[in-house]
Image: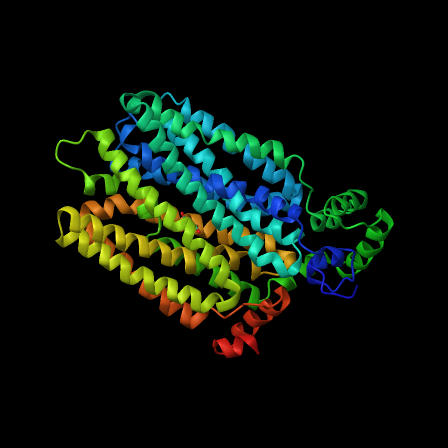
Amino acid sequence: MAQTGEMGNQRDGSVLDGLDSSSMTGLYWYLAMLACIGGFLFGYDTAVIGSVLDFVPYKLSPFWTGYLVAGASLGAAVGALAAGPLTDKFGRKSLLMADASIYAVGALLSALTVNAAMLISSRTLIGLAVGADSAIATAYIAEFAPKGRRGQLSIIQQWMITVGILVSYLIALLIFAVAPGAAKSADWRIILGVGAVPAVIAVLLRARMPESPRWLIQQGRFADTSTALQKLGVDVSEEEVRRSAGVIEEAEADKHDERKRLWTPGVKRALAVVSVFFVFQQITGINVPFYYGPQLLGGLFKQPGDSAVHAAMAGLVSAAILGAVNVIATYFGFRWIDKMGRRPLALLGYAGMAVFMLVAAAGVAWLTGTPKVVVVMVGFSIFIASFAMGVGGTGWLLQGEVFPTAVRGRAAATGAGVNWIANFALIEAFPIMQAAFGLPTVMVILSALSVLAIVFISKFLPETKSLSVEEVVAVFDRQAAGEPITPARAHA
Ligand code: BGC
């Protein structure tokens, strides 16, 4: 029983050890999928706007066009930052259910919108759910997952994001193909509204998932903890839960001081590293092909005489190909993250992004016709594959694994908030930069930012592969005390 418990970073010898060491069953995969339905909606709802942008019948300035694409991201920043304290107070499950309900309402309001302001507000509302979900999903998983499978279960979140992005293009393609004449009337509304379907399913299924046993025990709800653990296949009585909780309570007698102590220089450093990692994850341009892709690629590949719907569909086909590359490449991230480690995979990822963004830029600047289509698509595909293998899932994984449990909620939520602010900033700035410098120059700037990310990772990201949460925190503490970052040191 004497194993490192997750509660308050204490060795609590608790009934939760049973959970940590239990073998993986289908239930664990199912619960991880349920937690990550929000990841699917994150992907769907953030990417879907690019498909309908040309058909929304409201006159918008470049700023508001940028906002329409990025409004969900701004809402997401607020949602993520609010999620930390809210989930500590009301639980993981309640917040995940609330998120799914907001997703549903936001999608319906977007579909039924009567003017630009309503559409912009609905997109911001959806963003609240996206952000809150992104801050909590992996924390919920971390709190029930058997220790040895936490990484794999967490990467399901990234996978679901990529599937959501791909499905958004496929749904748009299907609807435009069925009713090309209704692109400016019914189609764009249906495409936005379809997001309500998985959201409602998520509300219904999440209502039956167990609350996080770790959160319940912290709240002193021992009978509920025992029920939740039983649902997870760990048979313990209320009395046994109460006994282990006593140990934890004693250890956490002065919670206020404990909290202060837990925000050690190492934890602050971990938060800084996760935040900067997330800034680079966004400002290197991954969402340019995803959010603006259908519009951008549609313009590039448009043949003379094509109608707007046909140009959009050409763009959607290419975006769907990129979306499929993203889904497939994420699988390799999933396979390699625990074998190769975070550092090498992230370095490789950014190197690929830097090189292939340049290749795509060369295609845009210097080629025409079929060679242009081929070079731009190959460039973007390998850029995205590099991100998917080394950068996307790695960011969300680090956000879940580098903080001690006592501050995980707030620290992870802050990291997620930074991710969404950076996401918003790039997407908002993109059309303005494109108008000012032209697309190829903007792409060269994005490539240079990937090179900067490589410098940052080499200098500041320690290897955290196969370390326990406590060991990870210790690595950051040593780093904060001035020890150099080398993979060998990180393992020491
Ligand atoms: C990023 C998203 C991005 C997605 C692409 C995620 O890790 O946070 O901004 O759209 O990956 O797959």
